[in-house]
Length: 234
Image (cartoon, rainbow, N blue to C red; front, side, top):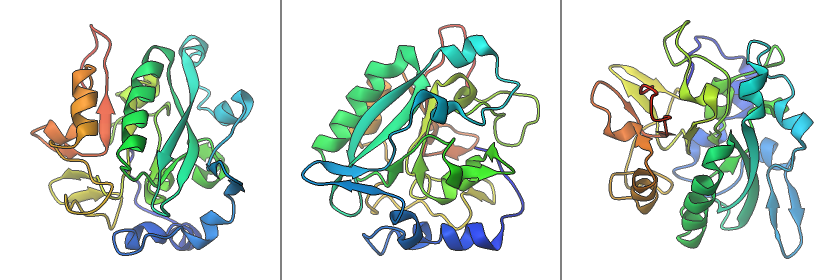
C-alpha cells in the first residue's frame, strides 16, 4: 500500500460507499453503474484484455517481470448477495493458489466487494495506477509495480505480482496512528473481515503465503504475499 496525503473531493465522493459498507449491503451507486449484469450468470466487475490490464503500467517495470504476470479470472460472492466475476493480475506461478482461495471464498460465501485490476480508470491518478484509490474503493488487487508503504526505494511484493490485498476497508493497514485506507476500521465481526481463524487465511498459510495480520511491528490485515524461496519479506 502507498500512503498519500491528499485526495480530491471527487475521489472521496466517488468512493464514499466503503465508509458505510459495514452497515449497508448495497453497491456504491456511482460505481455500480459501470458494472455489467449478465442474466443467469453473474455481475461482471472486470473483463479486461491483456492490453487493458497492463495499460498505464509504471514504465520502470522490467519487461521480463511484466511477462511473468497472468490475468486470472475469478468468481466471488459480494455484498449485494450475488456472484461476481473479476480478475486478479498475479505472477503466473501463483495462478492455482489464487484459484484455490477464491473457490473456497465463493463456496463459503465470504464476501468480497470487487476484484478489478488496478489499471482500471477509476484507480488512476494523473493516469498512473494509484493504490490509495483502489483501497478507498474497497477493491481487491494484486500486481502493481510500486514501492512498499513509507519507502521510496524498496519494492513491494505487489511489484512482483506475488502479493494480494483483500477487502482493504475491512482489513486495513495499521501502524501506530496510521490506518489505511483512511476511515477504515478493523472489526472481526464485520462481514469480509479476515482473522486468524478465517478458512481463507488458513488456506493461504497452508499454500506457503505470509499474512500481514501475523506481523508484529505493524498489521496489514488485507495483505498476503508469497515470496520466492530466496526473497525477503515485504
